[in-house]
Image: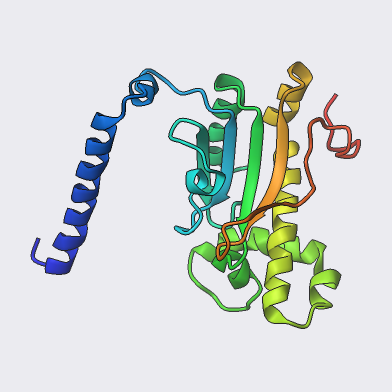
Length: 215
């Protein structure tokens, strides 16, 4: 590479992998050999792509215990084939039991959705968050402090994505066959590391409303 900074950055990745390989080689539990044969996670984590919110570190779990999908602002969009494919595999093949939609305070995507500024192609993605604002506009507009306004929209966005997830045919069909699948909405405080339950857990489609609950 001609750019020395790029070369050093890439070498850091390779050196980090060497450290990891060394750690794995010294592990005596056999868990990495077991992981090489397959995975059996109980958790599906749908989180933000933000580099500050890694699922395993936040939940105190080990490799192989969390199946992960991440995108800008932890969105569940019914036409997103990437998310739906992850969800289908996690629920119907891996048989996960806990699905977590995890937002985080300080989310740049949510903050951007509250502005009138254009950012590029991501504007089309942020329109889905603007829809969440539209539904809860009276509550959001009543908050005068901008940071608190963003924080509240972050919480409401998580709750709406939980609802969106529960209305997918994947989750609803799973509930017809299983009673051991729960969907949760949570939010992360990056500064403290705390993961807070937003109290919007669903274990069936009973509380979704008739028009959303498939027979």
